[in-house]
Amino acid sequence: MDNEKLLDAFIELIRRTSSDLPVDVVTAIKEGLLTEKRDSIAHKTLQMILKNIKLAKEKSLPMCQDTGTPVFYVNYPHGVSQIDIKKKINQAIKESVHKLYLRPNIVDTLTGKNLGDKTGPGYPVINFEEWKKDYIRVILMLKGGGCENVGTQYALPDSRVNAGRDLEGVRRCILDAVHKAQGRGCSPGILGVCIGGDRVSSYEESKRQLLRSLDDRNKNPVLGKLEQSIMKDSNRLGIGPMGFGGMTTLLGVKIGSLCRIPPSYFVSVTYMCWAYRRRGFEYENGKTKKWLY
Image (cartoon, rainbow, N blue to C red; front, side):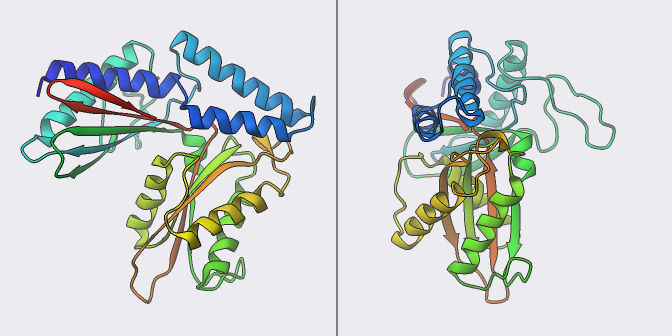
């Protein structure tokens, strides 16, 4: 493994993720634009979002002032050192701050002191998983704080939303989460949802669902039908882009499920803003062989 070339790949990954929104996301925003009444606030808001996306790509600058928490998903073959990969990721983040691909916005929680380009406990988030393939795959998600703040979790049954332990109860919880978020998550948003698991694994899987492409179809037909239903109902709420009203409240809904023990029935909702920043690469024999998304 050529460590210098891997470092360069990580830096380029951060640049692309921060400044160049994937095609599936841009396409969904353009489709949303077509549903809004011309010259309405919703229509103008989506136009401004698309202009922002274009400028960010042209200038290789962050498309949002909040460059978010870097969340890495790393698959690696047997024999590759997690320690080496983590060192390269941390080094790439520091160099990306100096190159203006990321903002120096990490702070010590207890003191509030800005740590500059340094990394710290819990930053970045790195998820490692060994696999049987002979190359490394890395996916990066930049998760903004505004949308992260409106994520939520329900424990069913939940009398607040009249939700029982069934798919109708799940549907009620997800729609409640969308309604409560309003425009505070920088809508139009994308939902990652997990049904089941424990409190931690459920949240983790809901975020992992955001790695799916917007135009894919759920392999589980029951969950696929639920995704479509939530999309349809959410876009009828009238929340619209940035909460200004309109038909484009969500760009996508991705739902997964995990096994659970009988006493627990969690529904976890992770909200992603319109700046749905996720990119990836595959690395083999000292070079990047493929870019993802």
